[in-house]
Amino acid sequence: MKSHIDSAFRRTTLIVAVLLVTLLAGHLYFWYWPRPRAGRPDSESVAGQLVLAHDGLPYRLWLPFPHQNLKALEQHLGSAGSLRQASVELAGFDIFKVPSFGPFRVPPSREILLATDEDRGRMLMVVRMYPVIRWVLRAAGRVAGNPWLAGGEIQLGDRDVEIRWVGGDWMASSAGLDLDVIAQDVVAMDLFAAFRTTESIGVVPGGLYALELDKSRLSVSSVTSRFPPKTAVSSFVGSTGVALVSAHFPPADVREGVNALALLVRTGSDAAQVPGAVIVHRGAEKRWNLPGERLLSVAGIQPVSVAREGWSVWAYDDASLSTGADLIPAIETMQRSARVEGISSAGEIDLGQARVAVQLIDSLIGAIPLVGRSEAQLWARTSSILELFSDYSNLSYRIGESPDRLEMIIE
Image 1 (cartoon, rainbow, N blue to C red):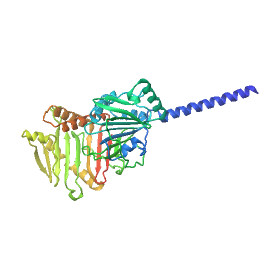
Image 2 (cartoon, one colour):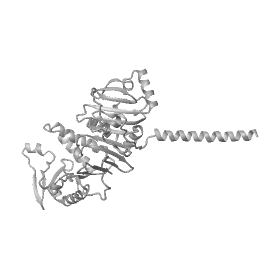
Image 3 (tube, rainbow, N blue to C red):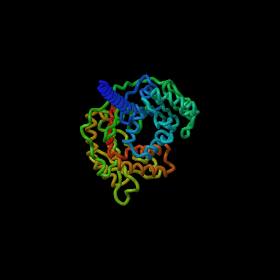
Image 4 (tube, one colour):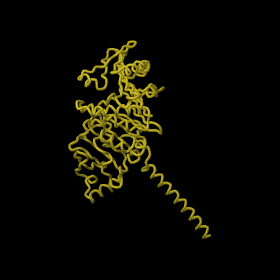
């Protein structure tokens, strides 16, 4: 009888032990294990308010569960070197030189927000840690006299940063930064990450954007207004030596107007010298300038043009003019799609060829002392961003007329 009871007790103990280990493993996987995990900005939290507000620093990145999602994000982006360079260009400091949080590179947290301005002079980081983690780290910081954890002033890059705790949030910010904002947007879906810009970035309008991941692609789209699924992807870049085609279509009252820029990668003996560029234009809207056109005009160098079936093609050499003329049917196809879908801008980029072309332009501009600081920064940042997507081959985008909508797919 006793042996029977002992056997039953052992079986029960084993079952309970297996159950506890399973529950613990499930808990660790769900809350801590690196993996893509979506979340939703909370209008009651500081980080959520900051990304949902229209006012504040012009560039803001919000990431839920960063200790899990950062690893997944890194797997979709470029090498550590490209991440380091991109962080310097885009945020103003090297993310790999940011102090660690005790044993954690990023502490287990519900959300993190990073924000900066155009000149990268002001910055803000907000981390909403798990309760036990913040108690332990804050106490450890006090014991060790570490201002990064306990609060105080530190030097981050070339700027003075104030560290403080506000409720359950750890914050690092430039001195005197105003955090008094009101959440205005509402997010009704879970996101892998969100990005807010209050200013246009090239063709990208200001707004709140969602980042989504799957095994083979990244996508960025407007949170508040989305396009229907795309039915087809154009394929006029890449094999033809065209690294990039970007087109703008004016509002409906001047719908026949079109501006398109193509960036070309030359082949042959001059392939590693200077990339080509061409503007294809039609209608009443003012023609876009070619890259560097204003600077070259000061030196007395003017672009040449040809007319083709109601279009004008502008470039600095015959080969680029010929390629631009060949692109007219593809641009007309983009224009027809724009009429149906309510698109104001669309484009496609062969990322491999674009990296080569932009790196060449960046190095050339860096060697010309007359080039303005803002233009030099634009090409340097563009080069850094393209390096992040070294594992991808194609980027396509479309931007709506009103309300502002954007969809960007990187494959």
